[in-house]
Image (cartoon, rainbow, N blue to C red):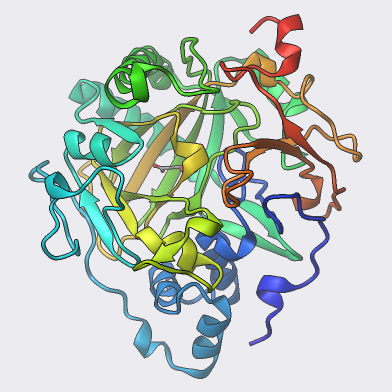
Length: 450
Ligand SMILES: O=C(O)CCC(=O)C(=O)O
Ligand SMILES: [Fe+2]
């Protein structure tokens, strides 16, 4: 199979840290999580568009089996029958117990015996976490089970199930290919005025969103409780997990206000979202996200981003490129049952990637059938409105990204052109380091209210 799928026709000049950036037009998710050869989502999307008849779980399995090489998967698929592609049957379902459960953990390891700083997982292995205590101890997330009164959760689920059939799969550009995301989603804001502002002022990879909706009555009902719970969880996280009980550098000390939300729908176990970091452009650095899960239980996987020069397996530096490096520490699966609120804390987007893993088997939900609905609540900050952020030479407001791979630049933020990442548009090479004060405010914030 031709190499072109991964390498052909790069048009953007790489920034100092992360060459070959690809982002999607999908609004909230998908700031390209590093270099293109490292994004499972992009690879899976490419394979799915090249082999539309093959189950995505099977494609993912093969991708993992071939250590991230799209080329090798293509070679095998082009020359073999689909008989080899039957998926593993190890799906998640409703949880009968929330006790920690670990599958495929190194022999002899237990969480309590593992030093905090050492990786708890290894390449190719998945550590499954269920209990709130384990999740907050070993990931940058915390979880509240049975978050809403049962009836409120069910009403919200029913309402969103009615909305979901009209959600669209997001399309994004990968080099010269347009690829579709493997699930559908829609963006919701508080009121019609904000909807108008979003449709005409906020760009997502160079384009305006067309389908933006006003939050539904049930969503409005729960956004207060979500706000309170997330702010409480953030305060607790700072106190119990951060050095000296102090917020992180660049983390905002202000209240988190959920004024925008992406609603995702995953129909059946094969719908998923690949590893990615959420876009920081309108949220600012050290963003917090509140994520409410409804319907079918699915696995939310998280993986720590490994800096290039830190990557080592069994003490030997990794010399091979791509996923192998990112996979060096394996991954953690957080099980998300119906009516659970997951908080992605301030260290998440810059240092970890997350995904919804395809599930070969799902337990149907009494209301949702084979669907999972997820609401990711976000705080769009006024100081990050595109009227203030730097514009590139295409005269388009730029995207905010965090350098993740090269040790010398790790943790630094940058503004970059994203017009070239939109299907049908060319980009420029604009790049500028982003500066923030300790509270994550940009230089222009002094002149503007938040
Ligand atoms: O469905 C989920 O739980 C995660 C969705 C997600 O990552 C996103 O909306 O950015
Ligand atoms: Fe995300």
